[in-house]
Length: 153
Image (tube, rainbow, N blue to C red):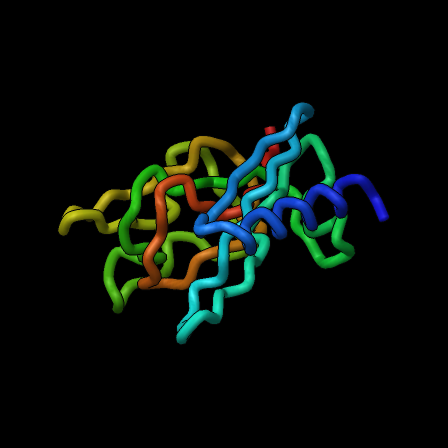
């Protein structure tokens, strides 16, 4: 077992045995682990089990690679605010971007509705959208990853 798997198990243990719902740790060298207890319906003394939400970095293996699952390398585009995620300007419109789309700096990627204000989220890099991490109409938190983009120049 690798040292990273040991660290992940330790992080999950800490989360399971505490009142915390989320733990976000960045280790020296750029490796980042964010573990969140699964939202779900719990009754009585049952607790939600933690799930790894993200851990990908562009300079090191991602947590999912370490754990042996499929992963996507690239830069994360994160939410600058809490709100509701929308992939298109209206329900009848096409999505701003789809997985596999080429994007350039300044392209609108999505809208986050916060306090009845529609905020367009624009790309800060050129690249290819590798993964859209949020479903349309779902709530997002501050600093939550929205997209994984493979940068290109």
